[in-house]
Image 1 (cartoon, rainbow, N blue to C red):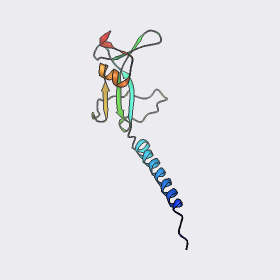
Image 2 (cartoon, helix red, strand yellow; image 1 turned 45 degrees about the horizontal axis):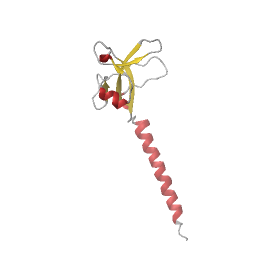
Image 3 (tube, rainbow, N blue to C red; image 1 turned 60 degrees about the vertical axis):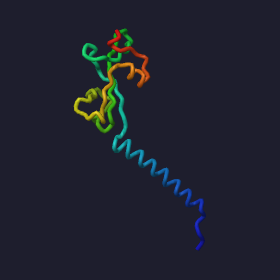
Image 4 (cartoon, rainbow, N blue to C red; image 1 turned 30 degrees about the vertical axis):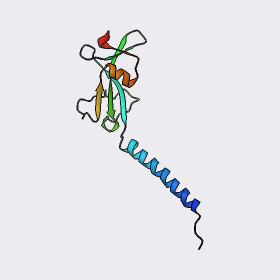
Length: 119
């Protein structure tokens, strides 16, 4: 019986490693939904300090940002209008965070926007 060449074993190990990385990525992101979602949600400028974006028709749009774990977000068809707006009201702070407009949040998200308190 002749021994297998070393390069065959090395190729097999490399294929198994690539397959393992693929399976781990699928499990973490598709099955467990362990990723962050970022969404612009409505904001009342009379009660909160909102981000302000000038609209196409010159009416400003006020919003705040929600950062939520994928597994905490409700399952919804994003292409339809039947989805409820994301909210952190009932979620743990480790799963969901709301960002109102501030110098820190503008810098963190890299926006070139104004805050409603600055108007």
